[in-house]
Length: 109
Image (cartoon, rainbow, N blue to C red; front, side, top):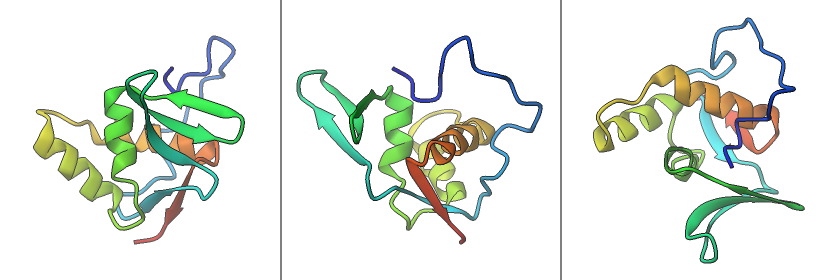
């Protein structure tokens, strides 16, 4: 399950993707959320009270770097070193949706 997809009832915003998440922000998982490996699913999952979100590879890679020390720009650079292309706006949009769900918190850089 992709935590950024909510199904066909989702309303589409006209705002720029990733708005509200700047390159200097330092994302970290909220206190009530945990990133862990599920042996049953053989994938990384995000644990939230009463919820398990199965992450795809790129979502897990982003969240592994959300430790409150790395800035969004550093996360994009790190992922760019691992993979060929990492669209900055997609990382910011992913993080913005997790911030909206209160699964990720941002601190100013």
